[in-house]
Length: 186
Image (cartoon, rainbow, N blue to C red; front, side):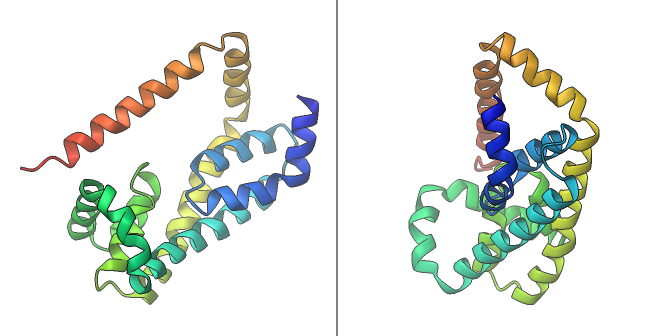
């Protein structure tokens, strides 16, 4: 365990940046808990996640706008999820940029849906900055302030390893149920 914490202290920010290019929710929670433990710095972690999260969404938007051939195979496999993303964009407009940061499962799809539409790249970039900052502030501070509880939960999971697969299966089932209901034809 000590070796893992030493490795995280050394390479944690690089791993956090790479992970946060695709979202960063669990990375920000882990960084907050590690910052609480004194293994990482919360301010640096939040800056890393902010820049990676912002950059990741901008890359997705750009690829959807200018490299549609690269996105096409992915779209073919996830038509219903893209339909849900388009509905979110139509229903909530500019607010969808903020909303997508907090809705697990559509975080990568909304920037792609906006990139495929006629949404302004500059406008998306301007709205994406405060949305990324809000995301980082909310989950970073929440996980840092709740670090004691997060550490105790992982201590409990260490004692009862059967709980984690149960939680993961429940979470996957809940997400699948949500998307199957949300993406059904009406």
